Length: 205
Image 1 (spheres, rainbow, N blue to C red):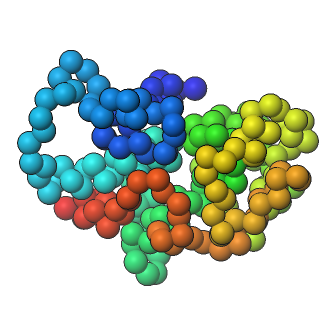
Image 2: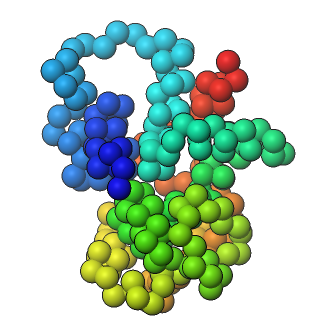
C-alpha cells in the first residue's frame, strides 16, 4: 500500500471535507486542516485555487490516483462526444476499483484497489488485477471464490453506511455486480459536492 493510501484521512483535513462520508474521518472532530497552522483563518480563494481544490477532491475521492493517470483520463474525456465533465465522471466510475467500491464488496476505494491487486476479482469470468481496468456496460464483476468468505468482505456487504447506486445491479448473495449503464454526475452518490466543470476549467487554462 502506498504512503498516500495510508494517510488518506489527511486528504479530508487538507480539503476541509469528509470526502467519503465516513464516520471515522478526523474531520468529524476537528474541522480544520492538519499541522500547527491548520486553525489559521483562510483568506479568499482565487479562481485557480477553487479549480485546484475541485480537481484534488475528485482525484482524491477515487483512491487519490496519480496526477498522470488523472490527466490521461481527462484527455480521453475531451476526445469523447458530449459534455467533457460528464464524460470524466463516466470514465472514473468505470474504473474497476470504483465499481468494486460502489458494489460494497469493500469499505473504501483504497481497499478496493488493494483487493483487486491481490487477484480477488474477475470480470466476465476472467481474473483481473488492474484497479484502473475499464469496465464496460454489461460487464459482470465478481468476487472470486477464495475471497467470498473473507470477514471484511462480508462486513462491507452488510454495512448500512452507504447504498449501491442504481446503475449497478448487485447480488450480495453471489457477490456479483453488473454495470447496467454509464452513470452521469447526477447518478453518482458522492457524499460531498463534486464540480467536474471546474476540473475542466483547470485543465483548459
